[in-house]
Length: 497
Image (cartoon, rainbow, N blue to C red):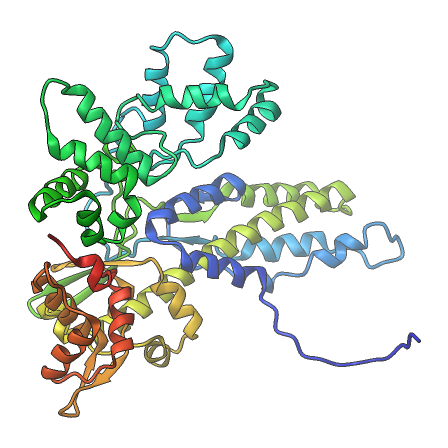
């Protein structure tokens, strides 16, 4: 049976401005310029400008939303149009400069963008050299468009057939698609359009052997046999099983594996202009060491300064002059409401950018002070244990806010560009009772593994014993966790002949 009842409850909801700020905090400097450009295109009340004034507070102005709702109600109170315009226009013009007055880093610079053919354009150019029918050409174009940036064809022939039917209204069968895949696999670079790693390596090795048919390389023939028939054993480094099955010596197997290791698991990476190759890290912060004094600056190069468009303020002044001595009409009220909404939106975005810069600076300044010894010496062993909660207590910010700042941000120092996440670590107590960062333990672990005998790599149990001898009491499962975080494979997969 349904019943009616009254209840009270407290809810916490984020305002649109808070959501906008959180999104801005997450994006790195590399994409901030693009985000600002998008807002400039979407909101004509926002513009680039160099003049700096304090941001005015629109909330102090008389509310316009209620009056707008009362337009159709002739009994309602009259909208004080002139009073609203006078108070609104008396406020200061909103603006915000991404670079402070003390910013003296030099002229703005942009990264040079090379004009090159993309990977897919290279494949399409090679496709033009084939003698294909119109239907075959369309199918081949669809296949090339389905190749990812690593050079692999991840889509099944059935999915490609469906795509052709829906997008091109062309009926094709699996045989036609497979034949064209085989032709595209002959394109440069070798290994392109493979369905998996095994096929990719086989294509590359066969291409090498076809280009030099007169030269006999027994190790290549052996490598091809291993890839075709013993690929799983090869990937898991079950070398003893391969030697037994093929009756090989250690030297023969080593020569064959060396041939395989020369192949490229991502063939598209060799193509000039491929977006994977040209990736630049743009630091969000820059730390300078001025004779022992650390100086922190935000990297705001290439990001435009922001302000409210003067034309919108002039439009409000024009409306004020036009309605003097008479009551404003409904279209005039709607026009003012539209202008106010655009200016409000621009002001919110400017405030969000300003708050973003302030939050980023406060967080990075706290990290710089906390890890002062590292930033002055560059010695990673002097990085102190630090977690999000430590910075939250120092800055007064929420832990989630600190996390958003630290995520995907970089700082440029005289010792290189570092990811902010690299400065966060938990503490661990040594045998003598002192606390060390887990980063130090990971560095030791990396060093020990790099020096091990690759023919007899160290097991997690042995790594635990070595660290214990150095004063670090760590469980074997913790060693395994750190090893996985460092992308170090297990001992069996580190073994070499």
